[in-house]
Image 1: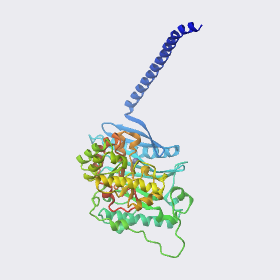
Image 2: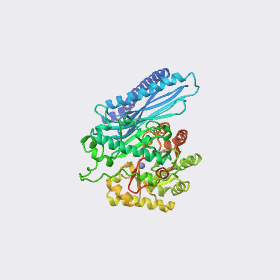
Image 3: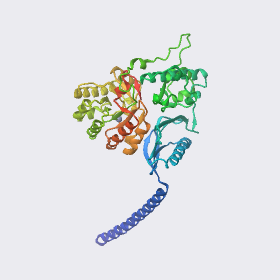
Image 4: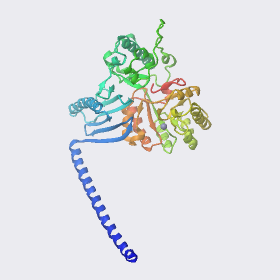
Length: 493
Ligand code: ZN
């Protein structure tokens, strides 16, 4: 019995294996045929439509993107739609984008007889706040319709996710005239300070004429900042450039003592009701900023590269050298010690070097002593290699708490965040990275990239050329910001 089985089994196994192979092969060929047919149909549909759709799987604040591109003889368009977990928000934003796109397409149709050049349009978005109940986002719309100037517009809202109802600025300040007046006073002083920084005249009329309706919606730039990121020519003549008017929540705290505002922002305790004159908004930036910074008369943007130096960094440095652009590198201490030659070259060629921790921990999960050890060890390594200790830091994941902030202050370092997230680590697609960087840039922007990814480094020539075409000068973070204060956080100029 035993013997018989032994002889018989290999034969049966062989048969079983053969029939299994046949089943697998037929399944594979069926799937192939279906895929082939499917792609064929999509292809036919695409060529009749000249639109391409694709989705990226980037988990950006829990949001994915849908891209629509059109590339014909008369137009080149790329639109990135946010797909959130709120259908109402998705529909709201899609409707806004469609309205802009419709108008652009009409212009293209009208202009196609006159021009033999492509009109171009890029629409991208940045999300600045995303909670279970609210989302704050800005659309960056750039169009070149071959007129006198390419236009750069923004649209921004803070939306309730349940029904995509925009939270108005008036609701934010507790529906009070006093709150609105205080806010307008603060934004007017910002306009004056920015105009002065850029060497422009900030006359009284300019500030008085700010159209109040432009301030109907706001962006929660972060938990401490209410922001109005206007493109050029929206609230003041376009010669003044983009106007991102940021108001500190602390300066508005007395108007923000209600549940809605507290859901969106970290609101400090109100001013105690003693009859003392309120402190005037201090124009401290205007006092310290001299007009001889490279950004006094020209719009500037700072490219920043995190997590290196790595195998692609030398190639990046070659590109920056060839295109005469400056950048800032937030390096890991551990990587710096592995690539000391590259780090020295970064310093020698005039780029900024900042501290990005030793090995990328979430600093907010560490004790004060551990945060200090990590940052100090990284500073010491950078100083040992380059001869100078950095004064800029960027916390891994942008994760900062009061402990991290206090340690940065005591080490004499400023905390540098970003205003444009290229999401380059998620997509790994140079074309998308370039579109986001160029499409979302505004004067004073700090753009986040990672030089450890080849695709990000590949995108840099396109980014530099695209920004230069819009008149931006590429500078280091220190050139962009001028004097920085230890312990303070910066997201843009
Ligand atoms: Zn990082």
